[in-house]
Length: 140
Image (cartoon, rainbow, N blue to C red; front, side, top):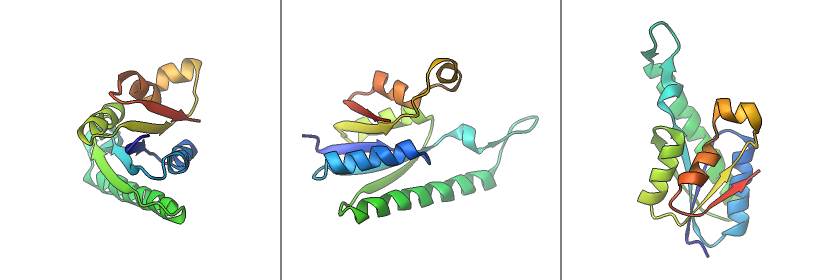
């Protein structure tokens, strides 16, 4: 039985499904809901690209709102979850956080992209599965 489950989230339906799965499957575990703000999300697209503090503030506000929503969803199911916000490259940040926080499992949503779109866009879930130091459950 998992004792500490990490659930990385974004604004997708799949992330909400992953949290619901974790809450249903591991109601006795400590659950940490993690959101990663990527540096590429806060660089203004211009020539040359520049750092935009207003964009960072907006991303932080959006992330805090998301984490509050996820926390509220868990409370509605009678489960308290911890939330964390980190900055970095998304797959690597998830993997590092799992190791540093002694998580013994990750539950992550996947968009289920295949073929060319997966190659072009990459897959956070796929990278986490391949490099995670702990077992990973992918929810679609």
